[in-house]
Length: 423
Image (cartoon, rainbow, N blue to C red):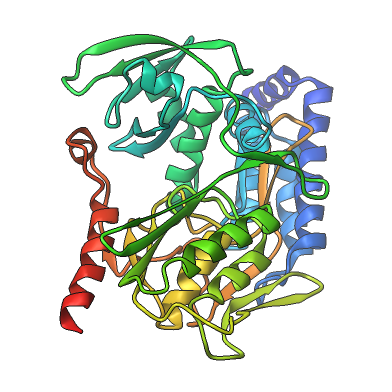
C-alpha cells in the first residue's frame, strides 16, 4: 500500500503543475463548449454529472494520454460523430491542414486520395509543374521533403474515430504537406506505375482559380469547369463559394445544354461551402415548388434547404459523382437530389461530414473537433457520420488510374447513354 502511494506520488510529480493545469483547463474548455454550442443534448444525458465524474480523472492524470482518455470518454457520451480529441503532434498536421487549405499557398498541381492506405495521385493539373515533370495519376507519394507519408498516415489514422471521414482528413493532410509559397520547390518521392522509386523536385504555383474572400473566412481560390461530350453535359468546381461567378457559369453550362441527353455533376473532392448555393444550383433540375434538400438545426435556429426552382429546368437524366472527399454542402446537394428522385449517384461513399465542424487547439496542445449543428436530409436520414451512399458504388483503384481510367465518371456517362437508348 505504501509503495502504491509512493509510486502514485512520483508519477504525479512527473507532470509539472503547469501541465496539469493545462489539462484541466482543456477539459473545462471542451465541456463548456459542448454545453454552450451543442444543438440538443441527447435524451437522458446529464452533462453536469459527466463533468463531475470525469474531471477528477484529469486532475489526477499522470500523463497527457490519461487526461486525453478522460476527455475522449466525456465526448463519447454524446454518441455522435465529429467530436474528437487529437494528440498534439497529430493535431499540428490536421489542424493546420484544415485551417490552411484555402490560404492561397501554392502547390505543384496534384490531387490525391488514400487508396489501400497510400497517398495516390488521382489527377495532375494540365500544364502544371507536376505534369511537366512527368508525374502521372496512379503514382504513390512516398515522401514530401523530409516527411515520410505512409508512417504519417498510419499515425493520423490511429486517432480518427470516424472511419467515414478518415479518407478526407488523410488526403487533406497530404495536400497540406505539399503546399509551398508560389515559386518555391518541393522534393517529392514517388512509386511510379512500375513500382519503381522516382524522385522529383517540383515548383509550386499559385492555386487555380480566382481569389475570393467571404466575410471573415480566409481567402479561397475558386475554379469552375464545364464541357460537353457525346451530347452529355459535364460540370465540376472545387467549392460552393463565389456565388456571382459560380452561379452564372453553372447556369450558362446548363442552358447551353438544353438539348443534351443528360448532365453529370462531379463533386469529388468538393468539401462544401455556402449552403444557400446548393438550393440555387438544385433549382436548375427541380420544377416543383416547395421542395427541400433537407433541414439543418443549430442551437438557436433552423435552416430549411428549400430549392429555388427556375422557370426553365433541365429535365433529362442527372448523374452526380462523389467520393470520400465530398463533404458538407456537397453532401447536402447530392443526397437531397437523390431523395427527391432527381439524381442518380455514382462513386464511393462520401465523408459523412455534413455538419459545420470546428477544429481548435486546446491549452494543452491537443486538437479539439466538434460539430455545432445537426442536418437531416429530405429522406429523413442524418448525413453526419453516414454520408451519401451512391446508387452505384465504384471505388477508385490504383490499377484503373494507371490505365488512364475514371470508372465512376465513365459509369455515370454510360448510364445516361443507356437512358437515351430506352427513350
